[in-house]
Amino acid sequence: MTTASAPTRRSLRPRVAPWLFVAPALLLAAGLLAAPILYTLWLSVRGRAVTGGGLGVVSETFVGFDNYLRVLGDTALYAGFGRLLLYAAIAVPGTMLLALLFALLLDNPSTRLGRLSRITIFVPYAVPGVIAALMWGFLYLPGVSPFLAITDALGLARPDLMGPDSIFFAVANVSIWGAVGFNMVILYTSLRGLPQELYDAARLDGCSELQLALRIKLPLIVPGLVFTGLFSIIGALQVFSEPNTLMTLTNAIGSDWVPMMLVYRNAFITNDLYGASAMAIVITAVTVIASLVLLKVLQKRAFGANG
Amino acid sequence: MSAVTDRPAAAQSLRPAPAAPSKPKERRVRAAFWPSAVLLIGAIYCFVPVFWLFAAATKTPGELFTTFTLLPSFNGGFEANLQRLFAFNDGEFFRWSANSLIYAGGGALLSTLVSAAAGYGLAKYEFKGKAFVFNFLLIGVLIPGVILAVPQYLLLSEVGIAGTMWSVLLPSMISPFSIYLARIYATAVVSDELLEAGRLDGAGEFRIFRSVALAPMVPGLITIFLLQFVGIWNNFLLPYIMLSRQELYPLTLGFNAMMNQGTDQPNVYNLVIMGCLLAIVPLVLLFLFLQRYWRLDLVSGSVKG
Image 1 (cartoon, rainbow over the protein chains, first blue to last red):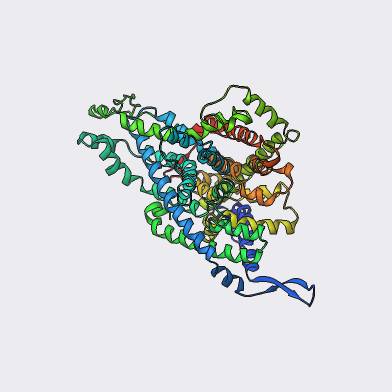
Image 2: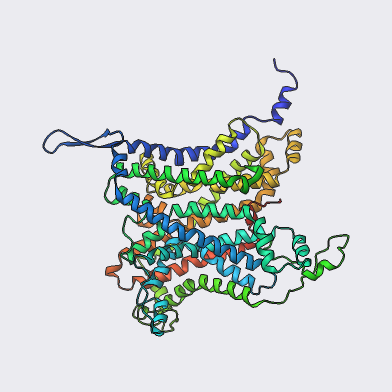
């Protein structure tokens, strides 16, 4: 027999209710995040086998780690990772430094036209990556490019904006252009949240606006910087649609330019679903481990007690 | 919070602070050249491609590759492009726009509801396995979209809904980042005392959520909705993999299809350019109108409620 106080206690510390609240998210995550990954894992140890002589019958069998060995022996994967790192090494610092610079300038009281600039710099966030890549692609393209028209007018040599080396900057530029405004707004919001009295005291002590920005504001928005930096890195490691779109306009990007494009090609164009699955698992493992390590290193500073 | 608020000028602090903190009047500091100039260069950098899109949309097919690209043309190219785009395949552009709206609007709404409930559940209850649930939901952020989309497609074809609108809507409903934001926001703005009071009054948990917790969460939920709306509107890969029937395409996919049939349609570039212009205008307007409802401090982790 339950005591009289039991129902009250149960209603104050509900046990079922929290599960009902998280249930839709859990179901969706299980069906659309976990199940696909498990399915990929399953496919990655399967393969095609031809049984019977002559025409034979194609069936699916367990092949163990064959797909992994094949994928890990594929030099295209390593080359893709190399290009991905090079691209990220340009795109991530580029985005972060510009976003930080613009946020600090917006927060600087002697800056004019701040509102106009803030809105204009934010606009690219609303432009789909595919459309951004198409626009920049046209801006790089000889014959349409205004930059090349300018170098021509000045009598300078024509730079190849989508050459084998410059292509890294070309792709990174599309990403930076699209991401800088969003990150700027987040950092600017962090800056606006700081106690203004702090600045007054510093200014009274003769601190210049530049010193104020670098010595006082910058250390205080480290959580915001870590957060935006982390998401920039995760975003850079997942880059796909920008190079995939630019590919139609230049030969400098092959269909295996970054690992993600390689997976797509293997899965849909060369129809090697098993190899593509093994590669997807390898890439996911690398990405998740790299992100988790990064998160652990930065977590304490970024999220403090909240964890 | 509106993005530009009053800022006390340096001189203000010399006066003794008033007892009641009345809003200090904005006193403008003298304008400085370099900060404004550098910021303006950044604005120009962000604006040039959009302006190019506008200029290119005004050009006739003959002018596109022959006249200076940043100079708009006024030879009727704009109207002609507009008419041809609207007439393209019996008004397919409108169908794609409507699809984009359904995917982005519907997907964002559903995902906001799912995230609000999950975020609230994780923020306001203590239960066994909570840490596991949170990590399980969050790890999805780290898995690249390309890698998820392929097996998602295979699994959804098993269930028989690949190629339908639901194959785009369902995966759009789960957003780990939105759940994370909803949790932070619920922690900050929903008062435990009010929840306890509701329980003492004998209200059910769902009723408490609806009538006590949801209202203060609205600004945060609008932010989540907008982030998710843009994310789905701009997503190319998921519909690209899921959909095969052209009448279900969203805009981004439609433009891609137009580009790919470019060879037999010489003026297709003009149409795509015009379409891109029309596709980004509503989003830009949405942002300008909804600016004041943004709670991006939510994203930067400095929510004060």
